[in-house]
Length: 356
Image (cartoon, rainbow, N blue to C red; front, side, top):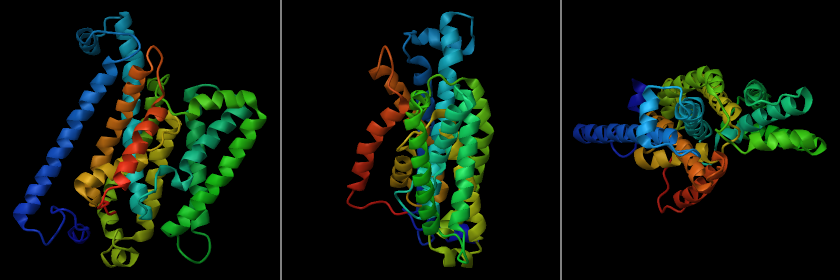
């Protein structure tokens, strides 16, 4: 395929000028890295099922995990810990992949899923649900957050494509910043005038996996799956667009369709993650940089690595929050901020930053 053959040069596997043996070796090494990341993700997920406020021996955890016997341990594991672990898996995959996609679409290394107003749109949906409709459950917030994210995405795209010039990454980013500012002002005004709504909203906006049941997982799962498949299918086209719109068109890429599908995927992924767990920062910004450190700019590998590394960070941060906050817990949004900020600073201080 022409697009794949012209993918950006990386460390060997995607460099057409590299010897075939070296390209095969690098591809094998990257595949091995994916398997290692998958293994770490499985271990972190098991740790999340095992560790919690209630101390349950590992042997008992393993036993009731496969054969629930109706005991207190089985109820805790199957009704609380497994749903939050599954939700952490979906949220992490969605945030990591949407972050990598945003950075590729905008060709901006500082882009994150909230750059196009999706996160603020979801927050606005929740604010409206709490303040004007009296919604008070996490499952009730999901649909309003989704509607808010979708409306914000459509408005940003309409503003970015207004006029005779086509929608470009710069125009979309500016439109996203404008919509974000308006939504932030609206949310602040509503919450400052309604202390009851503010009291409910502050528990959602911190970003948490606790208190979410399988119902929320089932609601967001189809949106996340569609977003993941769409994003992964765009990888070859994103490789071509990394060299510029004109060269991308010359290589046979439909630039407008690629950007529209990319924006749709970001809306689905970021909207689902924010609706289910609230805003969780730094994951979509940091994880693509970590993945790029290992595999370079090739979007085919970058998206796959981001999809596995991000849930490791989210589930690991959620588990760590239970340990350091015992007998209570620190919300996952707070832990990811503490972990992500120094990691991002370390990546920024690298002598040779990774290229997009």
